[in-house]
Image (tube, rainbow, N blue to C red; front, side, top):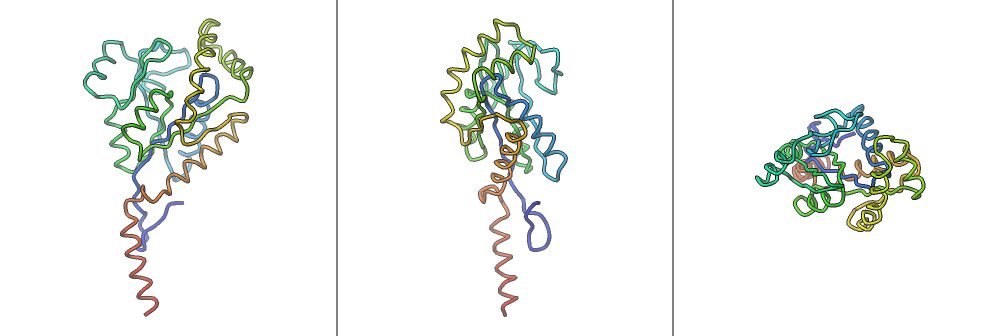
Length: 226
């Protein structure tokens, strides 16, 4: 439920960036999808930032929904013209986030969910720290991480082995995040991510109408007490 001004209107809020990062197989994408589904059934709303990537599209992915799939030349042009809020090379492919739609969403009071790695997170935090909440997701065990990658059945054995090897470096960056979730149970992890999101929405720095709200409340209290 949103806060209200004394006249009954809602408090205006600047949107926030919620980042979810993890090594491959930890479950950040499943958490992201569940969180998006729950949030968009309620009065609150958060939308996924759609990244651009040069990676080959997987059979389960839809261009423009999961990613915008572009050529290397297109990506490098966006990067060189500073049209990306963040970008990284991961597993031999480029990933990045267009800057303009994110900045417009925050200004309009809308929240944006980022499903990105630690390299992208570091860039976003450098550029937009006050607007950003960063969450790192870990698998419960290495064996479960491998099992999740194998159940996904979208990568061959060599790719899975490379992702597991890269995970050893990726998990060293957990200290750069505001929150850490060990994803043993998906429903529990989604509930924790939602609690983080709701708490961060209430931070006084994001409530742009708060000074006016306090002033109006003080006037009303003065009138009530004579």
